[in-house]
Amino acid sequence: MSYDALTLSAITIIFVFIIVIVLVGRNRAATEMRMRNLARNLLMMQSSEDAREICQKIHKKYPDLCAGIDFTFRDEGNGVEIDEWNSDKPRPEV
Image 1 (tube, one colour):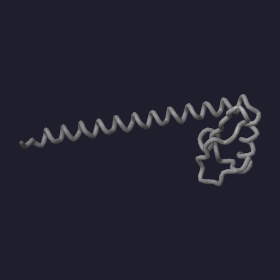
Image 2: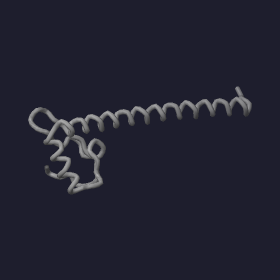
Image 3: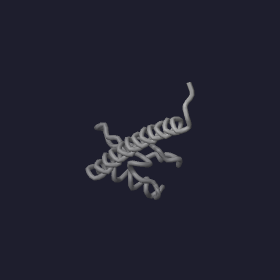
Image 4: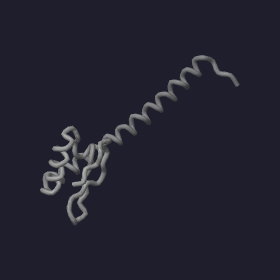
């Protein structure tokens, strides 16, 4: 079974189009998850004095890091602590 050049081109274009749609969907989902994480951390900083103090200490040591992106907070009832450290810089003991 052989196909002409037009059919092969159409199949290739459709295949590439599907791949692009899948990649855009994944990127969009990842961006939405990052935005939710950022909003959660900003809300925690607004409502928790401990989170603000930790953030200020980190900001004094690493002024270019951003809460919710480079590090995240966790509050499990016994105080706020750093949950994830996504920076390549050494994690501070706060």
